[in-house]
Length: 114
Length: 113
Image 1 (cartoon, chains in turn cyan, blue):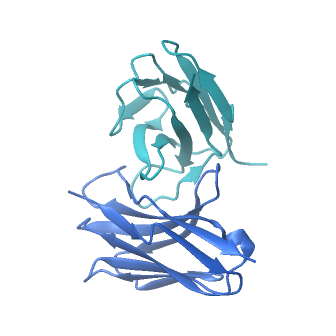
Image 2 (tube, each protein chain N blue to C red):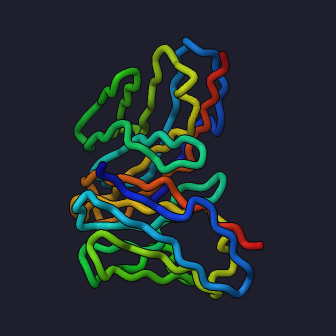
């Protein structure tokens, strides 16, 4: 059963803590992406990766970090430097990068700071 | 500045009725325009993708149109069903960027029985 899996579905973080969101895909896609979604706003790109061991900052990378050690995995760490981390986080993947490729999304992780 | 504006912000219609959602964009030039459906608390799912040279694209009861001259797109939903209740998001890909997608804020559609 192919797809893209995000975990956990809900995550609570205390102020000052780092948390890591998991994203795994078995679609053999080269490119992976992390987006943040806030109410009433469009999705915003945090980081993207075209190939293993390489990733690029998106529009709102500050306070976030990623790694791409395996093709299937692209975890996102929300660090304590991110001042307003409460949001819905979406991971996506595509066959290869570029504006004309179809992106497939995971089910999202809702992060709440408590 | 590249922007995508959607209207209305929210819409309530009765089951079985048709509706049309609007998308105005300032992105130019662009390579394609997409419509996504997003159920509450889930990831977006692609409905249609149109290149700049296409005028219309259908996917079942969903029909997207594109007018590149006026920089407008619309998504028409025919014979609405309760499962159509979701947010519908318009997304435009600028030619100048490899990975950047300009996302609209979406229209929240509620279908009532």
